[in-house]
Image (cartoon, rainbow, N blue to C red; front, top):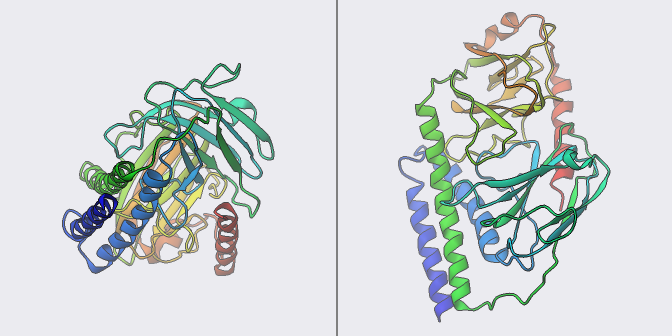
Length: 385
């Protein structure tokens, strides 16, 4: 049968992809290969679902990406990501309730960043429409509704980023999407299945290879343990987004101390990522990210962070989980000025950190355990089913 043959080709490509991620330029240590295969499972779950089960723009449903079990492309630890298929010649309505969500950014897109065709074509935020925590909302896209947001040619998806600033164990936002032109769906036959499966494997291959290359190339253009490089403004990405990259390389007994002016922006955060996969470093089991509500400021108004494998007792510790290297991203969104925050770094012996940062806010072992438990309670709610 044609469908059987199509499935066998998928299995062959998966096997070949497994061979590729076990060799250079991917990680080749035992731990890196293990992470690579876990990441391959992530990608299979994401892209088989998106391309095979969410392919019909006449019957869209939101597909959640980048949760605690499946990630790609450097997700923001403060976000929930949802995507749905659209056809720019049809009309859609998104309804929902904010609950504890602080903000959302909804983008009309031409595709994901790792694909040959991609980009943000239009974007709106909850605050643009005076939507705040607890509010209900209804947003129209396409057609002649008086408040409808135009769907440009080339639009294939709507993407939602929900922002959670204060990680509370409360009900997260809810979203529904409806196509208002529910014409009969295209015929689903062997040819359609083969096309969807082929696209699924292409998404996997392109995502895994693109983000591994992205990290390698960015690291090669920078100096380890330093943010000294141009600020990133992703072409065709979000206009409100700014990024600084620092690739750390630390011995077990070393720490990276980061000092930064507080960005003049509505939101900012420091987050840690794994090499090769660009997944967040254990966002549930450790404190590997801090946003503007979770970071203690020093008496001089600056923010100081310590990246290390062990807790130095400094409030703004970020746990590397024993990784010798990885990516630390400093991001600030909705800036009120083009002036960049001043930043500096230094590598120090972990044992010397308390003396070097004397006077900084401190956290006891018990307080750290309470902090982690509170974050985990929030994440259970944010990613509930």
